[in-house]
Image (cartoon, rainbow, N blue to C red; front, side):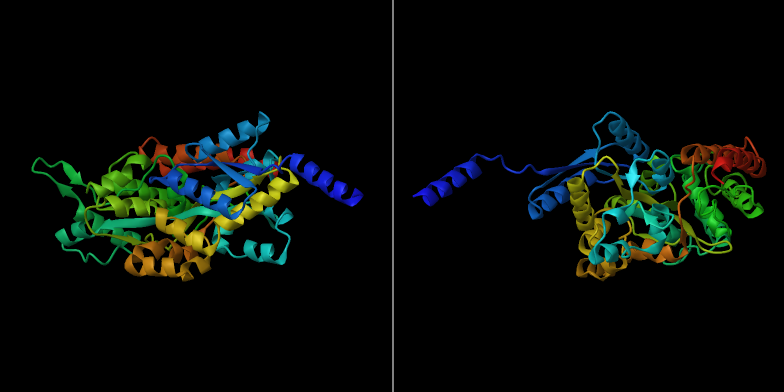
Length: 424
């Protein structure tokens, strides 16, 4: 009788005990590139919750990358922190300076976890690794690629299947592709390269192609005033001012994709993150190619990484690891690449049936992946925001004719040296 009473009492106590609370994850996600990505992210979060009862995921859509960083850091300071965020891959040094992130190695400790950390393309890990520790997990990553209008090529007698492989070829082709109306006004440019929004990123491609990166791996030195870097900016300026194949001055990042799909330029340099949006809106056949070479091919990587913040409990860190591992499986990396145009961040994603089939029918989807062998880390240093603005201002001063490329870049280098000297 006593044992029966004990069993009944235990049952009543268990029934009265509160249910175990879910582990809640909030993460900031930047909407910086075209496409209905909020629905995709919401769908992924719900699918994860179904497979992981006890974990709730709350995405917060925060504007562009800078907006996302500012809002995430403001929430941390206000005592309402997120556990993880997709932020710029180049935010690493600022996040380290503010001492707000932890390396994934601290949580990813099993053999399976460690294998996962090594599953990504090495060039995509450059911007997320510091002193041998992995702070950023590649998620929506990109390179710059060249888009070209095959109908426009055919119209002027160019091979529609042969994009420019070198700077000289691009200049020559772009010259043929410029189209004017009866009054002499340009109705189609030969090529456009955006020079607002992500000015330094585009310039980094020119510099890389001319043989140089713009910073050292330690993030405490820039290389803006090298003669080859200056020559790269001179070529960009010459496309508009000398060769007249591109508008002089600045070209807007945000409207260039539309200009291309409306036939206002025959070629454009842009992020592969816009590939799916171009595919869905262009009314003409188009190609995608690696960027043309000067001394070599080259593009910086770009895009966002998953970061984990310090103000997290042990349970939250475990849940965050489970979520980010789930989000970056080969199958989801493949699906994300198809949905957006971003590079699938790991080689085995390209071996999945879904992405194999997609790439067979739409070979443009693998160009950015193939370009990774020529890619370098995106410009990132200590004092990243200030250093980046120095370079952006210098480039725009040269493109608009306010300064020579040499004077603009030498001044930017001198100021960057002043900012970065304490970190050497």
